Length: 74
Image (cartoon, rainbow, N blue to C red; front, side, top):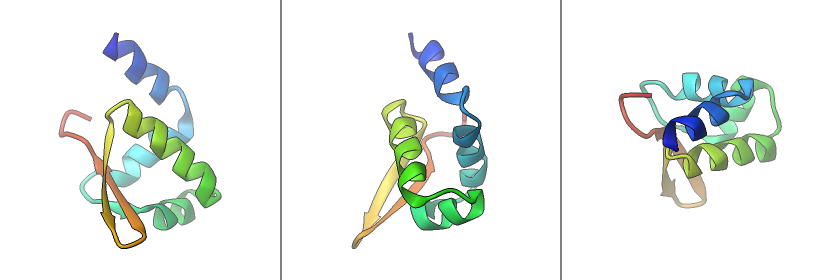
């Protein structure tokens, strides 16, 4: 069930903070990691889970990956 999956993703405070940071703009992992005060690899893992849950989308530019909210409902 999609709703249960979404609530499971939002049970982690770091993931909620990531979604808040992405409202209205896309950002690269390193910028998100700096804002949250967390290591880049940890932020990348959280973003990967959010992407699998279809809460965020990516855009790759060279070696950088930019994340954004997947839709306005989030």
